[in-house]
Length: 132
Image 1 (cartoon, rainbow, N blue to C red):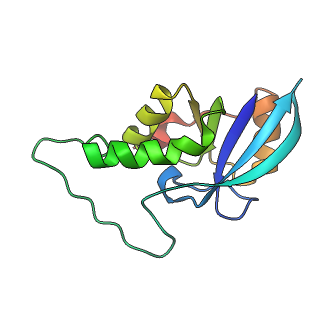
Image 2 (spheres, rainbow, N blue to C red; image 1 turned 60 degrees about the vertical axis):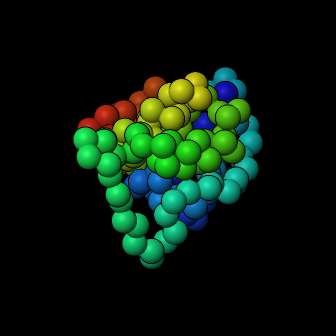
């Protein structure tokens, strides 16, 4: 199994999927992490920059054509993963991951090592309320 964790520093989990700069991709077998690699993550946010959202009348954020293309770009580098762990994300990003066959797990655990260990032990709560 491959698990992608959104991060800016390779140690802590980003609180928002769309703003992360990287993925830490962990390979896991038999309940243990067997390898890790850091991958770049395309995205529409760069640290420190403001991002303005525009919406067509009646359109839900994260579901217009531009957002879907952006989310597809974010997912393109982790299509070999079965799971993403993030601090939170929007519904459009979650839907793009779902369409790619990637499950989503949202957590308030900041440390990547701790979150991976808890997930592999079946003890990491999935905080679905962090979906916005």
